[in-house]
Image 1 (cartoon, each protein chain N blue to C red):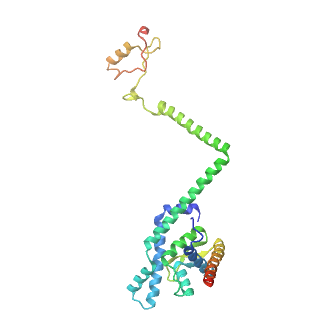
Image 2 (cartoon, rainbow over the protein chains, first blue to last red):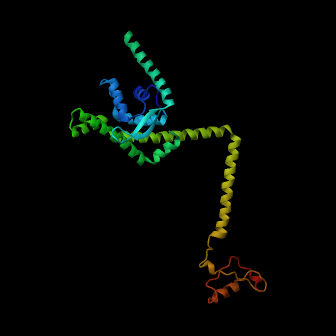
Image 3 (tube, rainbow over the protein chains, first blue to last red):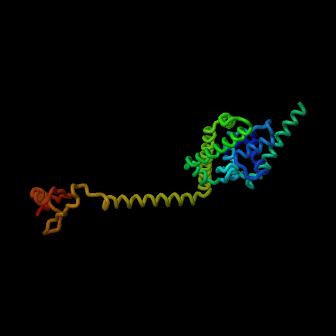
Length: 111
Length: 172
């Protein structure tokens, strides 16, 4: 899908999800939400509704793979884990993020 | 996810929808449980979880559109790739197109003949009772007089018909 590389809003969510999966292994959607919430605190709240379309899209891109498993409360749950191409994408997204925040920081210093 | 998977997703939208529903409802239940542990009553917790999640129908719809869009995009890419390959090998393209055209043409021609001669019933009433009447002595075509005779002696034949009528001076 023609995604503009400057689409930071989408890219940031991808970055957070990929990083969480790289750190924690297989997680279901709610697990990803909780992980990000527990690390980032209240200041950063990911929009839960848009998480699932993002997971779906990233599965199609081949960055993550989905597998049905059993959740902690004994329900069927879809567990996501990062793939090799997802790790590459994580490096790329991270570079973009660093570039963006670096550029914003430089502007703030000068202004 | 491969192209086949995407096509499959667009077709089996029902089971995809069920899987998504299952995934989303698990999310809401777990969130509600957590809120309950934090002290909300069950009803409040469910409402809060739903509120926090947002519009589920909209989200699943968005995912479905994603599948269809991705599928159509891949299809378009394939078509573009095919036409590029064709223009790169004009001789191959011409041979392929020509053999297809000849194949289809020959098939149509053979079928038209078979259809007219063997498959279609003759355009007369009760074609299974049709007889071919020849003038016995000469084996030539039946003359108009004989034909009329035949028709008039209707005990023998229902109706008479002739694809050709012999000229009058040929009469025997």
